Amino acid sequence: MFMQDWITAHNRHLDPDPHGWHVYSKTRTKTFPVAGDRVLFYEVEPPFEGREGFGEKALVCASTIIGRGFEALEKPIGSYKYVIRCAKPPQRGRSVPFAEVQQIIPWYWHPAGFRRLKEGEYAKLAGAMKIKL
Image (tube, rainbow, N blue to C red; front, side, top):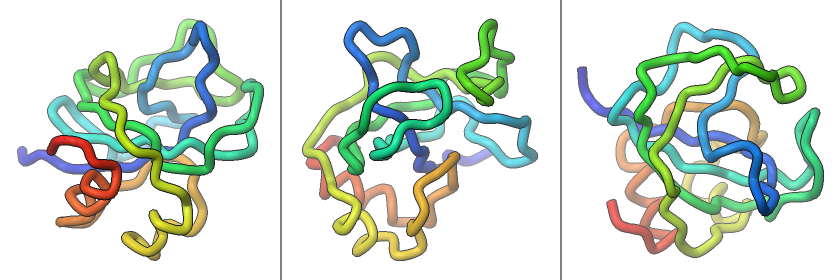
């Protein structure tokens, strides 16, 4: 199996943060990130169900998947019932606003859930964030 790259939408994280920077899902999908895959986190502006506050509306951090697949959340977060664990702490860089993200990946017009990135897109986005590959 080869490594894949992903982008996922996230709510603003509170301090202290009861929820980590992981990939969350409402359902178990057929295609999903696995251990070793890289993931970029896009912080949405309006909060998802069960969360508070407004996010940056920008790409804010990156991590690597360490989980082996979907785990049921002990306590669902709104309608999110599953988690795929990521390494801690996430790698932070420059926040990349939505308009700039769209210049790099024009198909990302509605940030929600998690989606696989095409070859080369992770490197371009990580470069915009000024983080190490």
